[in-house]
Image (cartoon, rainbow, N blue to C red; front, side):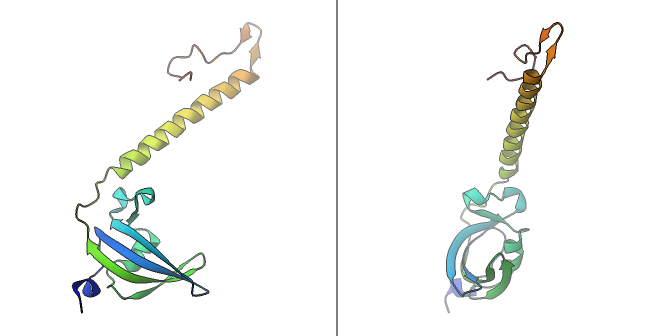
Length: 136
């Protein structure tokens, strides 16, 4: 038995799994299992607190684990190895930056909608001169 066959899935592991659906179709998926604060699915990082992370953490290569999500019914763990460089926790900062940008754009949209619907006796309302509003 090789070392990879005895490997156990844990945080900071690179994992390859096979997702098995209700019709026994199989799809391979590889990802890094990381702390939730470093999770970023777009970068191939799945958090240990996610349903998939919880299902496979602590299991050994070769295990078939029940995992019901959509049409998926189980997960077979194909390989697990330690990450060469553990994921950094900067994913939380990236998510916050994205949320801040979305909030800024929503505030701009709200200001523009108000301005387009407002007409007062002293003239129209314009967001062009409001301090702190990005006038792109």
